[in-house]
Amino acid sequence: MTVGSSTRTRTHERLIVVKNAIANIARGSAASIVAVFLPPFLTRSMSSEAFGAWSLVLQLGAYVGYFDFGIQTAIGRFVAHSTERGDLIQRNRIVSSAFVMLSALAILAALTICIVIALLPNLFHQLNEQLILQTRVTLLLVGGSLAFGLPGSAFSSTFVGLQRNEVPAAVIGISRLLSAALVVFAVRLGGNLVSMGAVTAAVNVAAMVTLFVMTRRLLPAVTISLSQLSWPSVREILDYCTSLSVWSIGMLFVTGLDLTIVGIYRFNEVAYYAVAATLVTFFNGLFGALYGALGSPAAVLHARNDRTGLGEMVATSTRVLMLALLAVGIFMMIAARPLLRIWVGPAYALHAASLLQILVAANIIRICVSPYIIAMIGTGEQRKIILVPLIEGVVNLSASVLLVHWLGAAGVAWGTLIGSFISLGGHLVYTIPRSKSVDLRPMHYLYRSLLGPLACGIPAILCALAWNNLSDFPQPWLRATLVSIAGVATILILWRMGMTSSERRKLCSLARSKVLK
Image 1 (tube, one colour):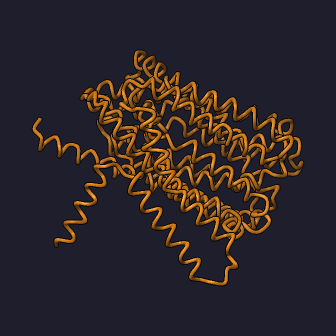
Image 2: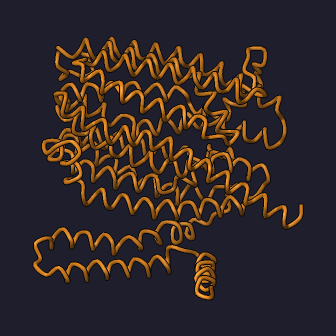
Image 3: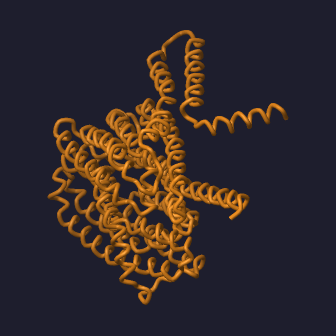
């Protein structure tokens, strides 16, 4: 391969990553729109108990996703890997085998939902008796539709593996917007939880059917049938997913049980925790769209044995992610109460502001190393990342259950923050040094990709705190000076610590060319 063709190939790959990132952002934007515009309507149209019950239904229904056991990720990884190698027969065997496995797991998920429905009054003692029947029926509709859609996730994962993220992004994004619109319509007509669950379930089923149709039309070379069920492929998927399953269980302890714990011990605070968690979900979804597009390129680079390229991709994407996390997260933490007051009203702002601040801080710490984790999954080294999430999950769950007795919902949020420090430290000390596919030095990664961007955010943090404390200052020029100093300091630190030497040289070269012109 010549230098020119190699350069063109790398440019093409970067364009694909950008395209997929944009598609993921569009998909995440749909979820973000729902997260931003639906709760204000529901909190003002429903009682806090009913809104809490609806939030609890969505949380319990979301547990169906954990029955995937990492198979969706495996499909994307193996499809990308086999396509890069030109082994289309193996690709079809993988997709068909995964579809059958997901179908079996969907039945198991549906049975689990039925068990939860039967035990609902025993699990949530403080749930209003008038809401128990509605909650049961609504959970059956929502959870059942999600279980039905579990096998259909093989279609969206196939598109992702082929680096055509725009297709599932469009289908899933539109379905989320439509579901939210129909929920609003149902509530405006005086509907209860059951009608809200019915329209949500209908859209979930329609989305999976649409993905199936689009797979048949846009990917005719990808065939899914029982005749292509391959036991070696099943074993390969199971081998890949065993560690991912353990990892997902750890993630369940970290993020999946918070609202349920609050519902068991302090159901009267579920609505407030749900509001804070919704904004954090918006926060995570926004950034998940950025780093989520790295999985397939990581698999491709791994197929080429490009350890250096993987390390550069992880280091650069982590630095960019960290800068973006701080820019959005700092604003959300400092403006938590006024944001919530405008968004869902003063009552929710009073109870949810501190929860939001703690959860945002925890998630900045947790997800800052996500590009590295995605790269490890893409290279098939996911076994090396399962210990840290398990430890984090145990610490998170234990701290949350312990602290909820004294601090209520805030105790659950503090448990998440405590676990996030365990996660970051564990990856830096234990996981990264053991990576064979990604050329990454832990201390260099910590300094350049994590602490450098964090230093860039310090002037902004100090400025925002001073701005709030000096809000009654009579001299506008003092506040303008404060902002100017913080802005200059941020730019200088960003120049020194937020960019690499090569990036600074490129920026200087670009500036000189502009001046000469």
